[in-house]
Amino acid sequence: MPAKVFISCGQASEEERAVARRVADLLRQTGFNPYVAIEGQSIEDVNSGIIDQLKSSDYYLFIDFCRETIGTDQNNQPVFRGSLFTHQELALAYVFDFPSAIFLRQKGTELNGLSKYLLANAKEFEQPAQAVGFVEMLVQQRKWSPDYSRHLVVLDFNRLSEPKWDGDFCKYEWFALIKNARTDLTARHVVARLMTFSDRRGMKVELTSRVREPLDWLKSRDFLGTFFAEFETQQQVDLLPGQSNVFSAFSICAGSSRKYEKYDERCLHLGFISQLTLEVGQYRARYQVLADNVPPLEFDVEINITGKAETTTARLCK
Image (tube, rainbow, N blue to C red):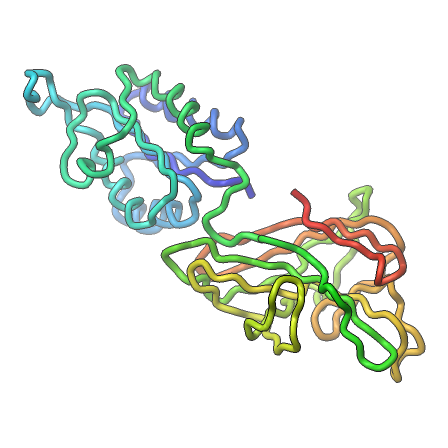
């Protein structure tokens, strides 16, 4: 999912609404997912809509337009009230601590209360239409990226450096490293699962309900780099702010055991009993990570099944 931008922008006139549309179009064309708050919502709408949209956003963009004249400054220049609606959103956004937020204000708008602190260095514009160009410039200056997330992120996807041996059989295991990038809240009840699986032509591989069941997370922090000690697993974890953990994406067994004469090294093992047997070839797997209180994370992995566990590869898709 592209980075979501919450756009807090006055919309009292058609000119202001046109600016909001142009800014949203600009961000969408740049690869972002813009959300424009609609003025005139009730308290219920704010509670159920605006707050939820702010929670799920990655970036915050504030544009303040002049309203009626409320006085003059020390240079006898007119001072205007700003948009009450956008200032309410500004106060809410402050609580969520957005990184690299962008603030713009029309020249002459009053700086008072929280805005006196947050908007002291806001970029000023004379006419509303000028705000669009400043947004484009500041997005580049602040190095905003459509790939950024301040929620759940995948940091790495890798295989254990050494297989796990048990008698005459061994298991090669691939793990995904997931981080809660939020600085203000714990991601609660985080689960991971295989969502879709397709071959190089894009044809979907049918997945049973068992294959879609939650995958195993590390229960303890017994890992360093790509080496893992023996550990217990669980299917659900909490991730504290800034904390990372890994889940087992899949494994391939090689050799033989008492139960099987020889393992099929084209078979992916997911969780405790789930299996997915494939033909030799390239595939794309999509994994989903869900939590109660942050947006879901989805990411793709390219898997090259060679028929040999030792030479099978998997890499995170950009």
